[in-house]
Length: 460
Ligand code: PMP
Image (cartoon, rainbow, N blue to C red; front, side, top):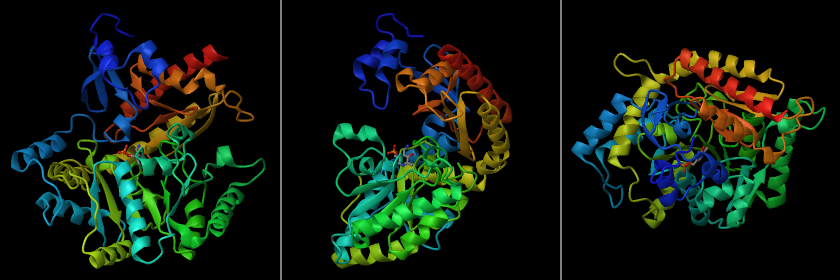
């Protein structure tokens, strides 16, 4: 695979780019895949090889890589007003329109929106908002943040502290006061002979005991992804949100739904909280907000947090927070188009969320078929996000030895067959673009099956 000629793209990538979230031995061995362009759900590398991207970039290029409407919306806005901020009593008309639209399509009756450049910054912003409330409402000790093990909320110092992944220990994180509850993954975390209902009840007991131990008045908020994405596509156990939400309400702890992945149709619903029938106090958005065509994140506040934050800001005449590119007019113009493309439909094209629901049966059938494989322990998912968990022994869920890097091997073999999918722990994750056809979904599963068979043959 690796082009060893001097000054190859692979050598140039290695020489000048510092890699993040990249398996360095694998890149050293195989070379970085340097991409030039995309068509629909496919991307092309510098050698002219074509890959079906079963990850839609990083869950976000859901309208494909050549959507004319999104690119045109960006171009028109670049021509009209290419950049501005949202400080000092000024903001672009696009920013005003996007905030109105986001509240309209949110599950909230009223509310307000604050913009960032990324999902991590949106989570950090939300935490600062909760800390701001604690200070201004005379409860400065209300600072602790509850999240779950295996959750992914970002990489900035605060959002990385919320992320429940062991790798953050290399940074000496989490910061104090970030508490990680059990991941609500029944298949992996359920005890022998524990029913799913009993497992969910145990998640509720753990939450209530944690609140009692820490002190309800020290907890600023609870953050949760409706389906954990980068944790390995983990839908909550049945009834999870119906169990935890009343407990949070009882103790007055705001619930923040991190919808960076689930928002805008990934689950087949507009919002993950709608898919799981709970009402959060705020929503964190990014990725599909612009279909990946502009870096942008947003905190969408429900009415109660809006009122409290507005009162707190009014009292000191300012909320002292924001980014140079918060509410960037090009990002807002792209997001307005993305909402049309995903949720409302454009002239001659139905909303892509309809295609998510049309494709879901074929996607679920593909997952279910591969779940029959002797080394696939669990196939799980929701809407157009799914994962296959590799196991050495299906009867007792024993994983493969970690040094075998089973999911990396599967993903690398997929790449060799022209399919990009993502290894996560011992699982392989699929999150196809919403524009895919049934034929492309079939191609994705055929290529994955070929790779699974090759890797498991090699390992067993
Ligand atoms: N929250 C969730 C649920 C995410 O999946 C991600 C990114 N994968 C983030 C936050 C962080 O977003 P970003 O990478 O844009 O900072």
